[in-house]
Length: 219
Image 1: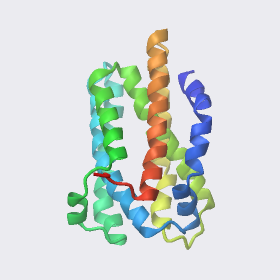
Image 2: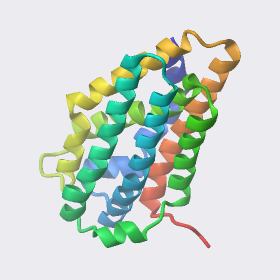
Image 3: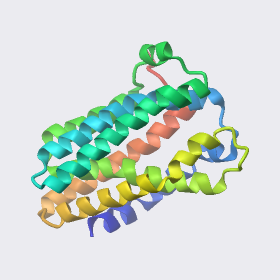
Image 4: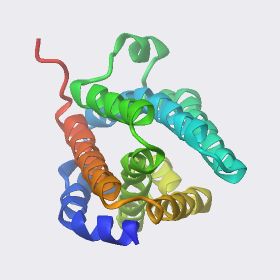
């Protein structure tokens, strides 16, 4: 299956992301608060674009069940983004004015542009492959963080959101639909799917790394 092959090809990249300082220190409760605040703000920008990318997948789909799956996932992404504003931003001292005044960083801008471009320009199979690492890597790394985090971790409330069964079910559904669409793709399209999956996995790594370094626009 496409998903099994794609994960195996990118296993070293997943391991590199899992062991990034951001994720290790988040699990240990030692992540500097400015890095976490930086991450949350950029995640808010990203989630809106990810919802748009999912809506584009729905528009490209023929089957009504697929349309429902992607629009439901898009709605969930927006609900998470709103949850940042109503809960975690207040909890960790991020104001609405700060979010509005902070543009997407170069990495977030690149990732957002990549996903939306794939939605507008690529066939459905390639677009799904581009979105899959966000679902899959986020779940696996999140579960790893959740398993190692202490009860008194200052980021525990955030970490607990990684372990929800609803998100895990959504990840499994995304893997399944990507495999189903990939089964109908030709060799060239499957190669493009693998390229898109790897690029998105690289951008996942870069997103966490950029947040840890609080990287912005150099000029």
